[in-house]
Image 1 (cartoon, one colour):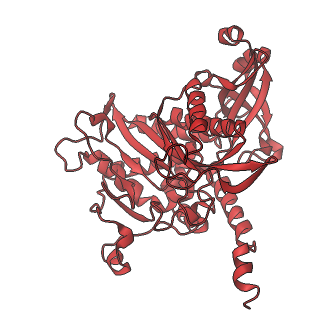
Image 2 (cartoon, rainbow, N blue to C red; image 1 turned 180 degrees about the vertical axis):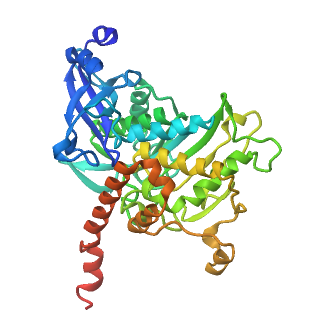
Image 3 (cartoon, rainbow, N blue to C red; image 1 turned 60 degrees about the horizontal axis):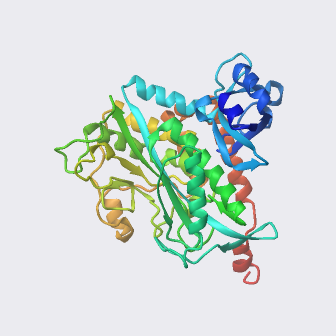
Length: 437
């Protein structure tokens, strides 16, 4: 409250996430903030995707004061706006079982009971599209490629403004560059504890979209917005820490990986098919997960191999704490709270069961014949959203991670999404069949 007065904050956005990962917000005047901190802020949960039914709709938001930040681009006439990320509670004062942030907190607590702290570092890719008269055009903003710079990279100033805003919002930015596809970009921020990093993912999307709009552009985190070029991923680097020490590191191992790390990897490989429904959660996600565009489709792991589902970045001397496993199938359409909760639960299952991963593959799997793939016993990720949802329905570990309420709501929503897509007639079908048949 002292900061609110000192910085002349007049409005405060109370933010939370629905089951799909969309940011929801209610804005209050700053003089109502103290009451919201003391008693929460009531709202109608029946109107939020994946929350409650209309006859049990009353819920309240409990602000997490550690997430309070002044919004850099929301200043007018000396008056400022701020945001706080909230947890969702039921009328009886209990955490709401369908709140994605609560679901991740539960998974993190289970890891703590085993003595672990879960750290993640997501890399979010996105596209910038041109707009005209307020409408989004399909054309990418520039024709730059990987690591290109001006004049081919027209968005360097946009990214700079995004970086400045992210840092003012408390994120420590590590790198920024143009990605492979036209109009595609990546800005990386420092890894951290899972709940705080999931908060940062929401903040990242919020800032990127706002700053892009201020430049007359539209930022999209759609996994595969343009046919024939690379889609956008959200590769997630993961480590487990114990007593502030990275326990994934083992000096004597070829890959510098401990048995715990290998068990964690084995768990994620075991649950990969069901996991896909949560980390690649849209119909469009599976237009990205196809061979040939650096997106993984084979359930395998390795170090130099970027066609593998899990990649182990090379070890460099003196950086033992940076030992990690990079899961490459998530995309930025995923709800980060649900994604990290499911990923952690899958990995912990591997540790509990002392699973061993298969032999690593260091060659490009895209160049293997089907016969060789079959001989090696390498399986593939589901080829569509409905296939991944069916795999999720068979995975008790992931169902438990989501909890009964969220799991049932999530599966129902994904089946509805698939059916809505399945019955649509596309331009591709018209072009292929209308005159031919």
